[in-house]
Amino acid sequence: MGREKPTDDLAKDVFAHFGAAYYHAEVLHRGLCNLYVWTKISAIGPMNRYRIEEHLAKAFSTTLGQLVGEIKICFSEDEFEALDVAVSKRNFLAHHFWFERVHLMSSADGCRALIAELNAAEKLFKETDNLVDMVAAPYLAKTGLSPDVLAEALAEALRGEPMEPLRSQRRLKKKELVSRAYELAGAGGAMALYFETDDGAIWQLCDVGLGWTATDTANPGWPPSSLLNQFLPATIDPRPQLTAPWHYDMELSGATLVVRPGKPGGPFSFSVRRKK
Image 1: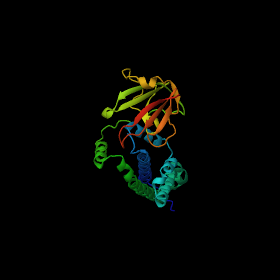
Image 2: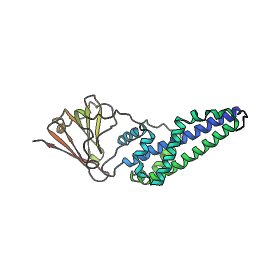
Image 3: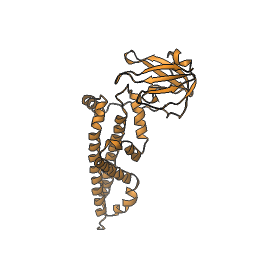
Image 4: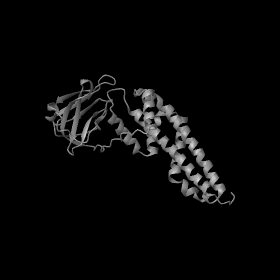
């Protein structure tokens, strides 16, 4: 390469193209996170917003390589190979690009070579993101989110309307000490169960055991569960052995909480079986 010195504008262009390429790598990452969530939504039993946010939080905290491994089953062999190439390129940009390429910034030809490489990376991320959208479409359709709902959400974002932040709740321990339970009227007259652990955290039943809720602490006005509190406190497995979504048993003190699915998309059912 020639030794013509790069102009300030040419050097700035390299950084601008790096930003554009890495931005589209992050768009791809978020698309993969969404796909991960869509694959976790079951048609059996209810799935509330907070359970979805729990899945999102897990996806966001997972490395890109681990995330791709979780959803590998969604892709054909050729599709996954293309995805793997994009992931490798993203990791190169994030961890090695400047270390291995910075010497090229000393010449104009080197800067142009970097811009060409970054343009190719951006194109790769866009194409792979389109692939992920295509693979995600049937999973998204099963969630019941119509194109109109998604279009309105996009319109709100483009209008700059503030978005409610993603909820945060601590991770479940392998064993949780549940001290109290509450029964609240849910949607459609269904009963909603809330469980308070020894540290004051609030949980509710989800498709695999205890899951996130809309609140951090119990409301003083919540009615206690006369049925469940007689078997509490109890140290439980918050994610018990699962037969199918909404199909598990939780061992309390002297009784078993039996959770079973209701109608597709409808309320689950529960009962308490006393131990002899």
